[in-house]
Image 1 (spheres, rainbow, N blue to C red):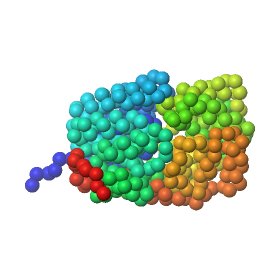
Image 2: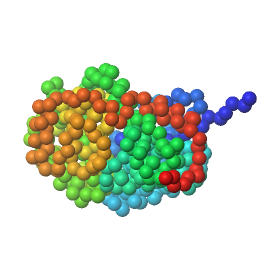
Image 3: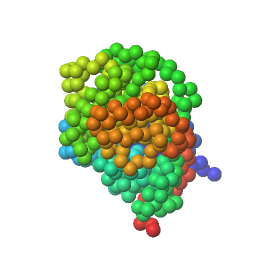
Image 4: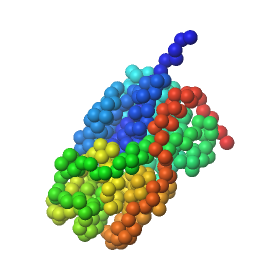
Length: 388
């Protein structure tokens, strides 16, 4: 009997957060006897100013099959639209060369729309990881548009599955796997010791910090539907963190409309205010980053890390503004507006409460293995109809 050819699974990673969202699944696909991993790295994941995630992937033992340079300068709404268009052109060529059996696209960043369109138009089955969630802003539109282009849905929660089915997707194509980023958090939770010096290992820019008595972490990205206000929003958080006087590790914003304003606020504040308690970083390896998060006193900002990984790690989170509106969250999250006073008041509450119990809201640490099994076993199809 002739042995079945391995399924070629093409995973497209377009940004820094997407790597941690899929890393454990990449490992499981790579190790699966019936699957062949084709890793495509694109957009800001290739750029040094956003942490050069591609270098981390290579260091982690992943071979990159193709690189797609598609980010248009400007970091405004027009640049986002044109970047997506460039990605569509380039990814079509990549898929034509690689001949994958399925293409995996992750979550809801705007570039993922190019991945889904290119694969769907080329009759390649589209697998969407982390559909069915609710957040608002452009992410909401992209996420659900990708759902309608996708043929297989691997979602993080039962409520997400219910939403995807209510959008008319065939229930047999929608599977709860959990979020692969929780797999990394589970690994860290087994030994959460901060076993490296973040400044010695990653450098960063800003004041020298003593982290021995506790520290804060900040991740604040622009909201694309409020991108003109990004500079003002980030400035308020900078003032709140400075006034807290706690050592703070601040991570650079994502490549979105408004990131010029957010980055400009950081540079101006750093040069004019010269804060003595803040140091700024581009990126860290996912496991180092989660170890750093686990040992912090509070995460501040609007990253989905605060909603997902921090729930599992029990880390207190101050979620600022509207970027995560509607997303399922645990008791560890306090929602506030953009004003510095509200941020400081929420920080005082969290510092008084301490750590929260681990909440498996987004997974139990085995998502990567489940995703690989589904990719190996599920029928791959490109025909679909509304199902009610």
